[in-house]
Length: 164
Image 1 (tube, one colour):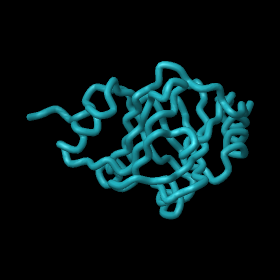
Image 2 (cartoon, helix red, strand yellow):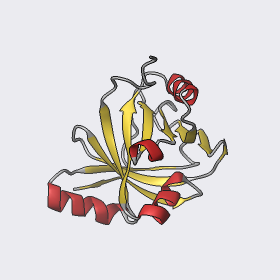
Image 3 (spheres, helix red, strand yellow):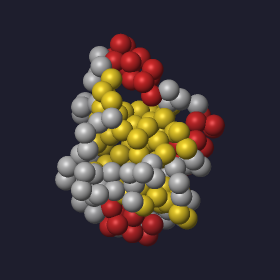
Image 4 (spheres, one colour):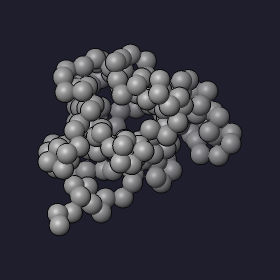
């Protein structure tokens, strides 16, 4: 039996969709004490490549990351269409994805597609040097959440905002 494409990779991030990023970050910090949150906007101005459901796309999402292990990522869609908007419409604010770190995003995409899990959204170029990328796979029916592969950038940009 062939092992699953991302076998053995630990979850590095838990993604939660929210309607208001700053309010949600403050709420999570107040209840869970898991701030501060470093915030960025990933969209056409930052990402060199964007794909959605198999074609070129133009989406934007605000993200807030904490330093927990696994990391919590709050996401607020601001321009679409995107899988973020789809999820909010169907499920409201809730757990959206679990991410794993990969050495090669292209390798993860090819491996997942061979296993029958299509890439439903992709973004590249969020790192300071234009590197870094993410790809989401259609695993909701099997897992109840989306699976994401993240190729981490060598260097992160400075956050636009830090929420305590």
